[in-house]
Structures are given as C-alpha cells and as structure tokens.
Image (cartoon, rainbow, N blue to C red; front, side):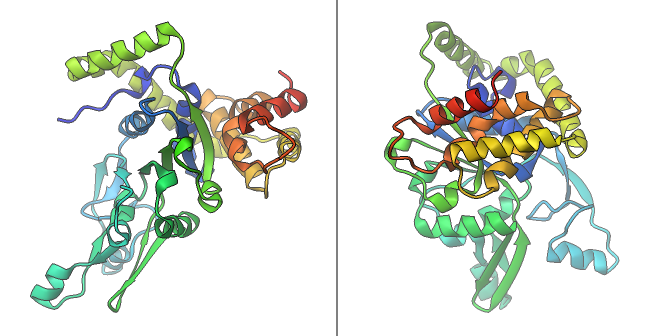
Length: 340
C-alpha cells in the first residue's frame, strides 16, 4: 500500500495550504500556482489534500469518472438512453501528473492503434486530461511547459471539455479539474495567458527559523520510518479537516456577500491595478469559500484580507516606477484600503 503524507501534518506553508483548500471547496475559484524553492512541500500538499478529500461517486468503468447524477460523457449518456442505468462506485479523487516531456497524444488522448490494426475499429485511448477529470492536474515546473501544451491547457481550462480529432475520429469528453502548477521563478516566467488561468498564486519559501526546520525534518523522518504509524497518529486531525471541507462545500452556495464587501473588493483591485475583472470574481469566490470553511454566514473584510495576496499578486500590471514586488504592493494597498 502506498502511503500519503497527511495534510494536517504539513508544517507551516499556511498560505499554500489555504489556497489549495479554497480551490478544493469551490473549483470555480480556478487553479493554484505555487512558485518558490524546491523541497518546500508543494507536490506533497497537493497529493495530501486529494487523499484527504472524501471519495466521489463515479460511473463504474468510465475513464472520465463521470458523476452518475451530473453531466455524462457520450458513452455513459448512450447507455442511460438505452435504458441501462449506469452503476456507481466510490473512487478516490485523482491527482494526475503532467510531465514536461509529454506528447500531445499522451495529454489529450489518441487513436487506439492496436484495436484499429487488429479489429479495424477506430477507438479512442483516453489521455491524461481524461484521467484528471473531477480531480487535480499537477504540473511541476509549469513555467517550462512547451508552448503547444500551454495553448492546449488554456483552451481546455476555459471550456471544461477536451476535443480530439484524429484520423477521422472525433471525441469530446469532460475535462474539469483543478489545475495546480509549481515552479521556480528563477528558471523562467509563465506565459501571461496561462498565468491568468490560475485563480490563486502562492509564494513559498524555505523556513528560516530553526524550530520550524527541525519539526519539518522530524515529521518527515517519522513518516518515512513508519508511514502506517505516522498516518494513524494524524488520523483524528485528518477526519476533522475532512468534515470541515464537506460542510464548507455544502454551505458555500449560501454564503452571503454584502454589497460593502463587493465594493471593498473592487476598490482593492482598482488600487493595485489588476487587468480585467477576473481579479474581483476570483477574490469574491475565494473569500466566500474561506468563509464557508470558517463556518461563517457571510463574507467580511477579514476574509478578503487573508485571501487577497493569493488572488491578486499575479494579476498586477508592471509598474516601472514601483520597484516593490507584487506581494509587497498588494500588502501595502491592503493596509490602506482594509486596515485590520
């Protein structure tokens, strides 16, 4: 059995954990971009959260994990139309890695050549996007991704659907996932078109205080030496966090967003100079998910303050007269517009 490091046991990195939790509560927030030092728990946090989330209902045997009560792919819809109700099964939330060197066919899917040659049947072999549907698509070193894959991901992220046309075969299937990218900014910038598709952006750093570093090493060492025992030790905290996520998902649609909060969000975006209106929409959705996670009935200025750096730092226009980094600019405007 493969063991996953418990999400609750991750030391520090509060902003990263908060952003991933928010995206898991409300997928419409968009993906999460995590930039920073290597070895700071980026991939560990994504896999830990996916393992923590409750299993989801899916059509048995469907390569796209279709929701039996939601939108179905063409094959599942055809079976239902023929009077064969799809059987449901519980499956874990998928976390799919997209390698930098992946071919387009591996990502989007391709013609099943073996079946085509052996039986003369044009059949579709689903790709990584199919496996990631209703889960997480994780791209390490996303800033080094080839341009043609970037263009492809932009289209799929916008539509929630993957369209493949190969050798006279035309296939459409659902491809809705939380896109999580990580990388080191020193190795290159991310293309603006893809950067804009990430709802939240997080900066992570190697801990500089001695007690935190010691605790990180201690917990990782204990996990590697006795994974079963370590996971059991944190099971109570994991169960508690899972219940909070489930309740937040149930409540998020009913969270009130007062006009004063909408006005504050727009003023904040105007003051930092974000491009377009996606900043306001993401900020409000993320603050609403955070309020649901906290068990609050309405969004307030405190929720905006906590999530604003993640929602806005990657949306700022470049200002040649301001040498401060994007995080500093957002925090400065927050202090002016929404003082604690």
